[in-house]
Amino acid sequence: DLLAAFADEDIARWNPGPTGPESAAEFMASRNDWSTAHHASWAVADASDRLVGSVSLHKIDPDQADAEVGYWTAPWARRRGQAARSVVAASRFAFAQLGLHRVTCTTQSRTPAPAVSLGRRGSPKKERSASPSGTPTASTTMSICTLC
Image 1: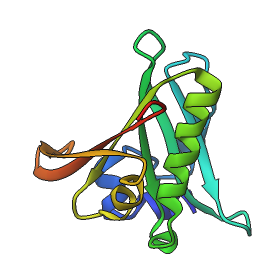
Image 2 (image 1 turned 45 degrees about the vertical axis):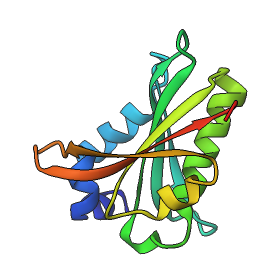
Image 3 (image 1 turned 180 degrees about the vertical axis):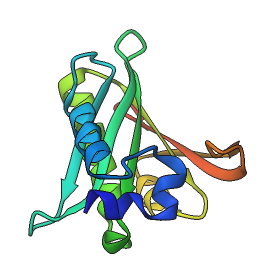
């Protein structure tokens, strides 16, 4: 399922990932390494234990008490609220376990569902940015705060 997910154009555009069995094993090992304390990742599975996505806290800054959250959802699991639930769960972990006060999530404007759901928990800011390939894209940045 991991390789099938990364074969999806929307996931591959924003997330460097595995392209074969060996790189899949390396990818999983890198996601399991929380030793630097600047990154925490989780695989997201459905009730049948099928991989449906991933969520990560990155750029964790204890001094500023903030982090960024990133996620992807497999094509077969989209439009079921999984991305928003994953981002909220990671944010709750950041607040309760890491003592952070703000988690920032940036979404593509063409995939607004997570931003709409998260809008109930933070304040959106629309921006123009570029994809990793340099293509201009519209995005929404959402700050989720313990004090908001």
